[in-house]
Amino acid sequence: MKIVYRAAELLINSPGCNYDVMATNLSLLMLNNQVSQDEYSKLCALMDKQQKETDKPQAEA
Image (cartoon, rainbow, N blue to C red; front, top):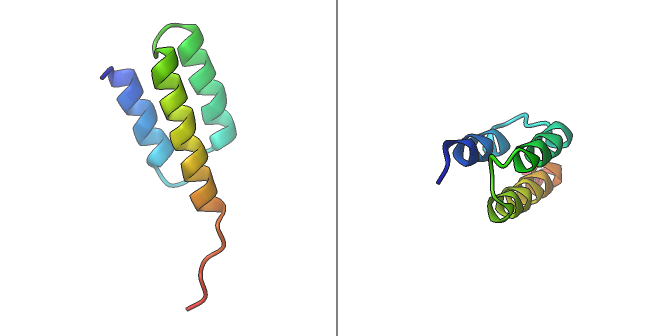
């Protein structure tokens, strides 16, 4: 696993991740061959999952 992939993964999982900016960054990483197409797809899927979890309303206590 490339260090760039791992760094992107950590950023996506961090609180306060700006998903719009991260989507742009992932595209740039792929265009510059710093992540493979497969890694890009995995990171995008992870970002979608994290974004959906962040957007969920909090359950009432």
